[in-house]
Length: 211
Image (cartoon, rainbow, N blue to C red):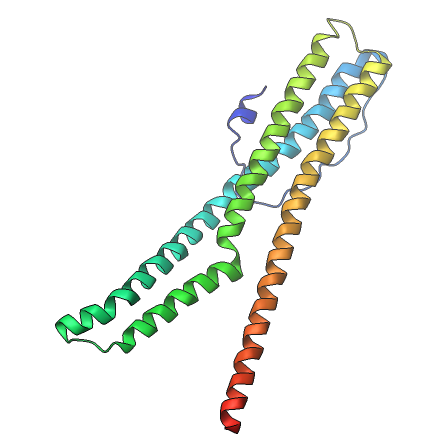
């Protein structure tokens, strides 16, 4: 298990996870071990880049999710206290409570539309899933290597470990695809709710004008 796998560190900064170019490898008996390790490193790097992406991306989502949620809680509490404070000190109109409550609703709507809170949770889950799959993949690779001793792996052993690398890459891509599909579904749902709300307000205004 490499040090980066235990504590993956970002490269230059957050960037999209890109597929690795396929190298031409030598599968002759004397070079099989080296070629297998090249394929293993390619699969491991793909997972580490995905983990790094989620680790970096969730920081921004966490910041805005906490800010907007705390803002919603604080503004809602203030809206409930304003009428009481107004009655005690006679310094403000009770209408301010409605304004503050509206601001709380705006903060909540922004969080829901931009998906900060849900993305934060998705990124945590995806990163943990990929990390778990990576640890299992690394241990399987070490177990396979232990069975080779000092000799070059056989054709059957080579095919087995290559099949494991293929399965692992598919697992990582499936986790990323599942997280992306969840984001698309949430975003489409948010758009539908906004459109529905806009149509409802427009119909209400038309009704009021007719009355």
